Length: 343
Image (cartoon, rainbow, N blue to C red; front, side):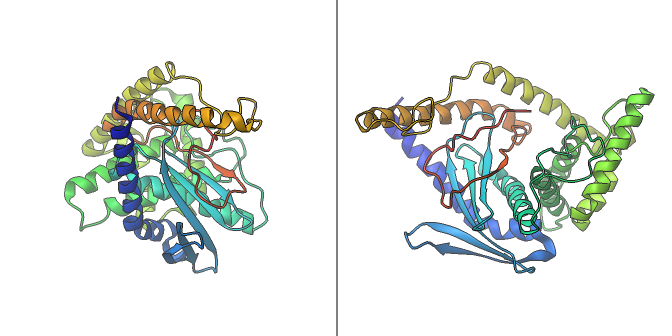
């Protein structure tokens, strides 16, 4: 493969994603923050790098640094935080189709705002997700930052599904995506109604999740969740058909991703470090840089293979990366090395 052509294509894709971010970020953050939103402005740092300054109506602020980079397969976005300085790095896979960028941004903004809010209140992060179909609720009634990312997605999709200025097919697509996300958030019982005990337990858990999430949902999202978060047997025919199609497509995508992950190669260490995490001697840095460049190209190629199939049905089925405490205050030039397994 001609690496010059490949690098040019990657740079073009990265530039397209960042241009879309600049165009859409204000709309996304205004939906995610709702009445709390005050402003978001593009700024230039002293060393010439672009970032976004976000302010809310509660005198909160955050600096957002965004980058589109190659990412390991199974991830499409990752957020790193420094709540001490209110600096947040949002990394997006450079293989992410631009039509899905706004939903991804909504998720990441929802996560980082939740992380900032808990830090400002002097509260420790919540590491266990509640809005997850497989989560064991127990007596927990708190939302993690990742849960808030999912709620931000719900609010974004609800806004699009309710936007009368959008063409009908786009509204219907957003409604179907929201319904599918209700499944993954565990807000709808998925056990068969004929299985009395499993269905009763799933219904109780789904009800707890909806109650805990209610105050974070927008007005549009509350209405749609109330309408759609019912067993598929109780949905109207159009919504039921759309949900079944989403479930079938998600299952196919999951199998494709699992098959790909089973063949993936061992990842590289961070540039400038060996496999044990120790700095490389100076005389080995040049060779390591060449190996890292080859690895970045491999990662991008593998990510394309992994997402080209699943994205036709549900491109966001690969999981988002976690919000992670980090002292970093500027965008990374390459993969962070922080990976997450596909749950």
